[in-house]
Length: 622
Ligand code: SFD
Ligand code: AMP
Image (tube, rainbow, N blue to C red):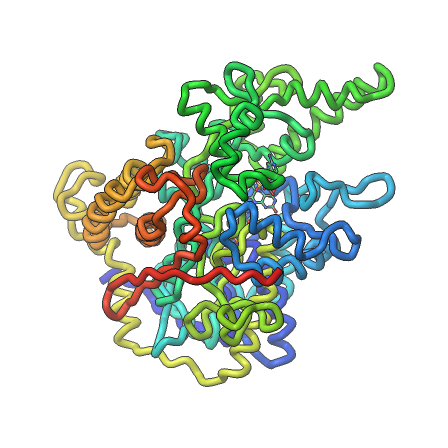
């Protein structure tokens, strides 16, 4: 077996991930740990300063409720989320995050994040819930606070968390490996917060070749949260609710600022606005088709109908929006000034969070004030923090949750001591960067309480650890033993490379589970066939080979993605209706069915290697 040192780390509270939710968890855990004399450790596969979705920065804070300013109430936010998700949402979780998110935003500002202010000193809003920021260094600011709170001695960067450790229905830690040194890590803990983001590259991306890694959500979020919680045996929710954002085509620049701040329209190749010409279609999705704003998936759907009829390209009418806004100026001098201002805001929007879109504009001589830019629906992502909803099924807070949704500790999964936040927790969409940080804080407070109230030392079976170590490092051994069996190391009868494995997974998901090339359409028959093929793929995952540590990480990223894929297919198949037509369309069940106004949950049983599918009631608290 590959010669790896085993490093054991004992802590009370273990935070997995170093993104927005994990940074929130770190800050809060440090506070409660001091009060309860607890140790806290954090593990990130990358370097916290630039890890996760906010790596490049962001140009807006998408969740700010403004309760104190009297702008909105928590109930308003819950209603917005419920409508956007076509009625499927855990109101207790959304409310819990919404009532804490403003204080998180105030912390960001205190730590040095520049939030736009108007002349009166009020935050500049992009839309009702969104604030504009100069956010190129957003992640650095947030990570710095987390690092200061925990201390670098308690932070393990560049360690890839691979597998949960569970004993007698309780989480006792996690194992992983360094992506830089030959070290296998065993983390033992009394409570664990899973916050390793969502999953990208489960579906085939639109671009191939050298553009493969360009996706909207970061490709380094590869399903670790879903895998970790599924494999621990936790109940999962909304695994069918993938997110398909509409983005500037090919470089994936976000559209929010254009639609909300610049009040731009999108039109098809014939100059028609699908939000108007297709308005009648919204009746078919009532009552949600009639709410304002129109739910994200229905906005997608109207656009997709145009695309399917060959009416593309779809354009964001940047030139029109800039012309309209600048013409509101009092005189020519003011107009020119306003034009310059708008141009620079347009470029900054991308430079703050999707630099490649600004590069694409430059490379294609695009001046947004002169001509429109194409937009398109992205490949599907799994992300519980944005307008999708997939994640673990977690307990609500004691004061808000109905008894069916409360089992002792806020945001704890159905596995004792295992918590989830951000993309890792489900049915509480629209938390974005700020809400994920707030949920991280809520979760860490509860995880500290759990560790203080359940002080028994975690015991882990050593034979189990050794077996896991052998399995996790096996791709290195397989490669070493067999690399000379062929002249081309990427084609070998004894192992499959992580790259090739990923292409197979993506092709399968694309063709059978409703990816880009099938216009996001699938059916029971396609899904059943997809599941059959996925079984073969899973068998072949035992034969993944890795020539170095980096590829070892790639192997495990793909295994994580595979489990996310399986939970997804199983849950789309289980829910016998189409509820989010702009996310996926089940052609054998093309309508929304009131019988399915429930959560579709699933659970993997590690002891029997079997899945259970179940419905859970939606209980409204407002
Ligand atoms: O407009 C392991 N998001 C936006 N949110 C906003 O508030 N405003 C915006 O402007 C936003 N936009 C946006 C956004 C995201 C992206 C990519 C773009 C634009 C281009 C969404 C937020 O970023 C998102 O909601 C939160 O970041 C979610 O937080 P969290 O903590 O759930 O995920 P993370 O921040 O990605 O962190 C994940 C961490 O896990 C680590 N990790 N660590 C150890 N072992 C493993 N196996 C691991 N796997 C992953 C990662 O390294 C990372 O630290 S707009 O377009 O929507
Ligand atoms: P995006 O850039 O698409 O991630 O959007 C950023 C924020 O604006 C999110 O809260 C979206 O839900 C919201 N948003 C984007 N486009 C629209 C739109 N056309 N109508 C209403 N809200 C939108």
